Length: 103
Image (tube, rainbow, N blue to C red):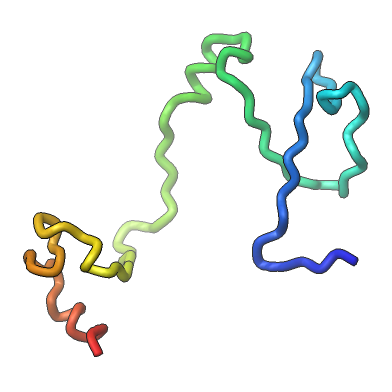
């Protein structure tokens, strides 16, 4: 019986694409999938025929994921940070915040 969890198991299917048709690498059909199933297609850039598509897909993009003015907080263990970046004996960027988490 299938029980969903926080990190669902992924299955890697080796496939061949020919003129928009997808089959398993051994030539057999894909297994039946649920409607709307999502998959990730990874191909070598050399397999893209159109140079402009290759350039477009390889290009960098900017994606806004935090609105302007948002604050992003992170906790790090300072013993793994070198001195030049504020490690154990280096400067503290926000020492007042660090004091709250020391116990």
